[in-house]
Length: 576
Image (cartoon, rainbow, N blue to C red; front, top):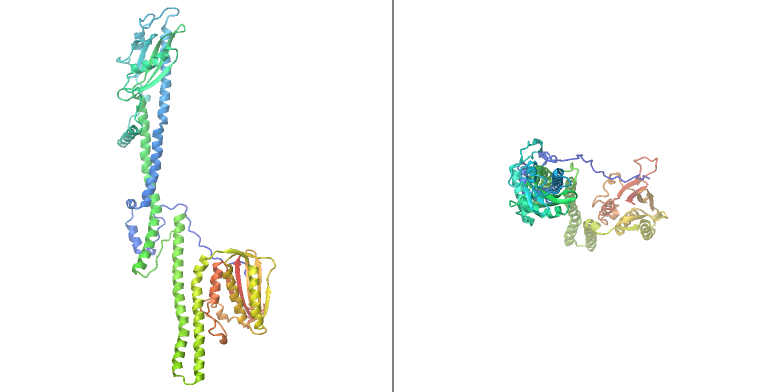
């Protein structure tokens, strides 16, 4: 007895590997592509991607992420906050140094009056202190009166420091983007600063009262042109008393200029990032939208061909299985689906042809019998012809019933829900029932089933139909004194169920044909009693459960292969 060691499963073909697929790397050679697809590819370019909704979505979403990132950076404005903090610290330090200059000139133990320049030349000291062009220095006495100011006074000459010059270079694009941003910012966040339109002196007077109380204060505001101003005021101490205050104001708009330069650098990078993002998005879109477009076009060509009867040729789905991504999987799935559909169509066509051929035989016999019945004169001849007609009618009825069951089998196998059940319990019930039929025919019926349950998942009724058919066939080929044996064994991840008989065996030339539809190898006395669909249906059910079924003749181990067989054996292997 031959026993398989494992199921023979068809392995998928190895995938042609590729880690990254760009551009048109996935394209098939032109000789394997339909003319309509070739024409579409020849007109394809990056510019034509604007007609692809998927490509537009990819580009739009990538740009939206970029815009949100840049807008968030500009809106949060962390560099401006850092510049403001550093500038305020610098003003505080500068104001304190200038206050130290005044305090160093004051005579100890003497009365000092800043307004009357008593003990110190306030105006002369102010004029000698270096300051940036646009920065102002103001000195107030203890009563808050302005005693000296650089407003309207030219700063003393000083040598410029080239390394501290601000790079004010910009481009037309960044100027436009900067203007757009400032316009949007003005609409979304209009300025509500109460100090807008203030002069440096007005801003300084707001912090002087705090400085005369002995503390350093800072205040920011905007001038009439909307430029940012900063002022810091610190007290002038003499013998432990506050005798005045020094206020230092920054250059109007210097922070704005630094922020603008920083913003323009970000916008320049933004422009570069947009260009790179659009380029990469176009490449990405071409690797996604183009193959999907080809797949859709191939499917539409197949639909139109069948709808309009344009071409009898097959639909050819582009082979994109070399792609290691979901599009490659989709192409493989569509190709497999189309191949399965064509196989099903061809199988249906072949089935229809076989049905027509099988029905013609009893119809021809019926036509001949009916025609002969009209001219038959003897009663025994008529009786014989009526028997032929009745036999052919039963044959047609059986044939039509089996054809109907076979045609519905595919859909029923898909529609019915699989459940776990005990295979041995089902076989036990079947053998108990079939043993009665065997005893009535004088056939010994032997069962050899394990005691331990074997649980499998499947359609119990359908598998029962298979084993009933196999056992019934075995009994039908046996005569008085023959034997039928049904046994089962579990082997690792599968279970084998074997039906053996000691009948005449199977002709060697029929071993490869018995599972074909409408093929029947029966004794002469059983002609017309079977449709030849039983084993074909059994094979279909077993394969739908992921199993295998085959037939072989029983011979002794050392017997001549050409010697008559000792019987027939049918083996069903099912996964556990």
